[in-house]
Image 1 (tube, rainbow over the protein chains, first blue to last red):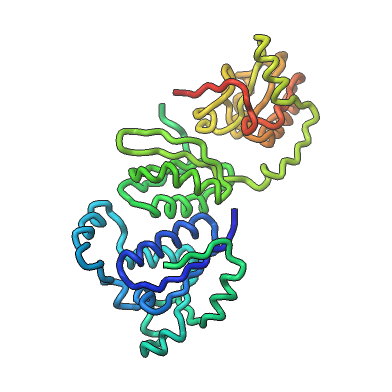
Image 2 (image 1 turned 120 degrees about the vertical axis):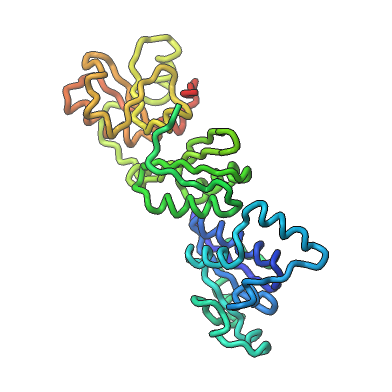
Length: 131
Length: 190
C-alpha cells in the first residue's frame, strides 16, 4: 500500500520531463511518498522559465502534434499537479553553483539539497528511478 | 441500467496519469464506503484504475463500457470494516451457504452492499437492500423466514443482522467471509 519512491531527474528535454512527472504524479496519487532530485540538465524541469519551453529532441518535432491530439497536459500543469499531490522537489546545490543559479530562479516550493541529503532520502525508498 | 453512485469524476479526454490523479482527489473527499464512478476515454485507465485501487487499498468494483467512455466503479475503503469486529453471534460460513444453495433449499439471501457492488456480481436470487436503506425497507422481508445476510467482508452484514434482530427477526444469520471469498455462482445485473 504505502511506500516511498525516489527519482533522479538528470536530463532536461520535454520527453524527460514527461517521464519524470508522469511517474511521480501516478506514484503520489497511489499514496506513495515521492521525492525528485533534479541535477544537471534536470534542473530545467523546475526552472521558472525553462520548464515552460523544454526542447523536443531534434527530428522528433512532429510528436508535438501527438501530445496535443491526446490532450496531454503541458509541463507547467504536470509540475503543479505533482506539487499539489505532495511530491517533494529537491534542486541539487552543486549543479546550481556550477551553473550560477539561485533558489529564486526556480519555481516555488522547491528545496535545495546536496547529494548526501538525497542519498539519505532514498535510503529507505522502495523504488529508485533515474531519468 | 443506471448505477447509483455518490460521485462522478469526469476524466474524459484526459491522458495518463490524469484519470488517476482526478480519482485520487475525488476519493480523498469521500466518506468511507461511498462509491465513485470515474469516466475516462484513456484506454490505459482500465489497467491503471485497478492497479491504483490495489496500491491505495480502495475497492475496484468493475468497469462498464459506454461507447468510447469507460466507466470505472470504486468504493472507498473503510478502516472500521477492515477491522472486522463482528459481534452478532449467529453466523454461517460461505461453504455452508453454498451447500444450501446447491440443494435448492428455498432460502432468503439478503445482500446489504451498495447497488453498484451488487450490480457487478451477487449470489443468484439474492435480494439487494443496501445497509443504509434497510431500516426503511423491513417490510420487504418476511420475519418468519430464515434470512442469510451477506456483504463484502461480513462487517456491514453484521450490523444488518443486529438491526434485523432489534426489529423482531428471529432467524437471521450473518454470512461470514462474505462476497470477497465467495467461490459459488455469481449473477450480474446486466
